[in-house]
Length: 221
Image 1: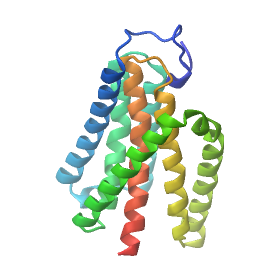
Image 2: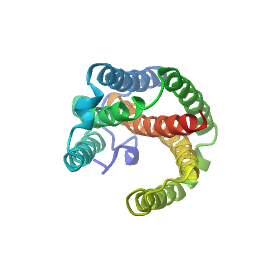
Image 3: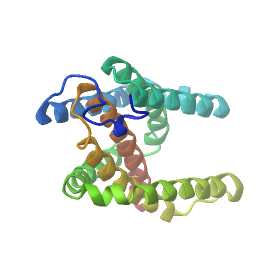
């Protein structure tokens, strides 16, 4: 078995092959499940309960859960295990979303959701049309994201400032990732497990895209 889902070839990937329509349907359903869980968490978990968690405990738990979930769905070829891993990513993301969306008017959040959906749709089309282009820029996207994270950490924790241009750069980076992940999702063997794994990668791209778009729109308001 290959180290990660996106390195699996036709001969090395286990699981029954499914049609392209079923494959894309599974990706869509898994994405919808994650968004539904996040919506439910925002609606039912009081903002104060999340905000009252010790910051160190919160972030250690957040990263531990996300990395464990990513490990599960990238290493496993068992759909149930991959889906469990996916949920280990969805839940901590839901807590972050809870903290962020309560700072904004609900109508603005809905606007950000619509914009994110439109941008995601466009980038998926581009990812299907130009998969090799997105594959070529994947290394640059990774380097750019790491640089932005370092710069943003320095700005927030040392300089106590935040430049709005950072949000625009992150939006562009994750637009690239949506196109890249959608393109490579359609290059690997079409199995239920690979559909779940692909959805998990796209979920993280889309949520990060949404959070930055919301921040940009909120600042403009």
